[in-house]
Image (cartoon, rainbow, N blue to C red; front, side):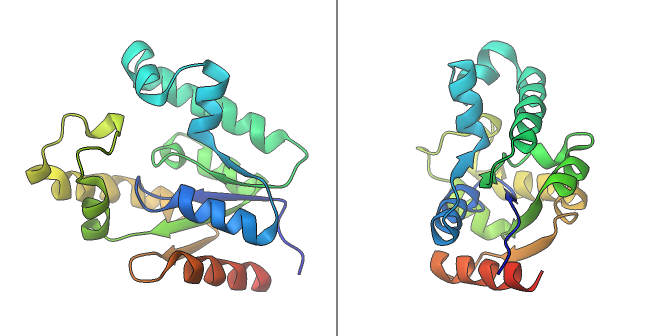
Length: 176
């Protein structure tokens, strides 16, 4: 089976992009890259620090710059990107031109359950109360869905185990 050189995992925060991306990379023997970690390493600041010190617009510009840098590399990898990355102007076209994209689709309820714990550190959620979380996620998904649906394939992640989701992705990759 000939795999795509670059596989990009997209989806809302807490949809499992990093966890599933790591498992998929291990299964197909590709390196795994998390765009947020890549940016943090390059900038020598955590994502929350970047948001706090430089602002969201600065961070979004970094996402585009470093995504292009990675996609231009002559290497194979599985890359997970931030939930907002695909919504930036021209990014889904860039991703789909240079890689095979996979949208991890999770329900509002699943996402809220994963994001509700207070120990979860997400810059965009610092001002959102638990009472408003599901509504906030629903609004975001409504705005982001047109971008996410441009992925090469979509995988529902609510009910299957990580191993089963990775197996499903591998089967779809084999048929592409």
